Length: 349
Ligand code: TXA
Ligand code: MG
Image (cartoon, rainbow, N blue to C red):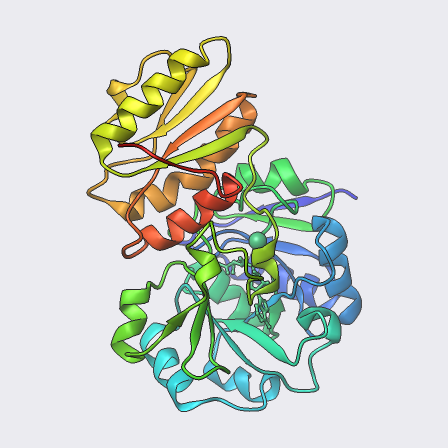
């Protein structure tokens, strides 16, 4: 398949390009669109065949349900059977924005979207281009992250091109995404609601609206072998090709432990995922990637997936990543890092 690239400037969105994308969605085509979190591989969420093609293009397991993306609250009515009071509050507070809510589904949604579950995941992205498209097409757009299954989510057009060129009808080039990790997923059907995937809207943000908000422990605890409540979380996502380790604890101890291991593995190509504060402290690494300053965790989230892809590009044998506090967006960063490491956490003393 020949993939068409449509470049859109978010500050000067051309109407005719949006209309072309709307037509493509109505015709059952696959279109990759930028959102504020990561790029999404979209199709008309009410078109069963089109949604099946999403799974094919990504190589996604059929038991992993999709998120429906909408532009207006009114679209919820035909998609869900019930909107709990706390969900209404979260919608008012956080939409449009990087949070996906799980509702009881309506019969209108094809089973392929929900992977046969009786619930459905819905989010309203805030990205200007995503919003322009969703408003124009007035369809719920099913869109998982636009990476091949198992690869880090795409935060730049070039990542999407690497993974999906020739596999989708259109890729919208909207530059780099903002948040850098995927949306928070929260199950609004449980009491109290439970965070199934930490992301752009943090536990601390949610606690203000839902004081007793629960967290699925498997999202932050690598030693917890329970089955995650969100089907997608059980897969080793965001997996770089190299063997990866995450180092936590006192930062001086982390640097010391990583340097010790760099020495022991001097015959290997090792990438260190460091921070601005520590990037000059490592000796003998093949490549040291600066994720950004520890003072600015948003920046670290923004750079994380690009750094993991860079490790693949450089074909390193080993990745040593500095860890972060589980506070704020740090919980989302650590969730992704631990997945990249397959749970291998080292305490630097
Ligand atoms: O930021 C994002 O959420 C991006 C952009 C494109 O919107 N999308 C994204 O989609 O990350 P995806 O498919 O890569 O991740 C969706 C996650 C998966 O872990 C999936 O299992 C979970 O949401 N999910 C979807 N429907 C669910 C449901 N009914 N119950 C529990 N988890 C669900
Ligand atoms: Mg994904």
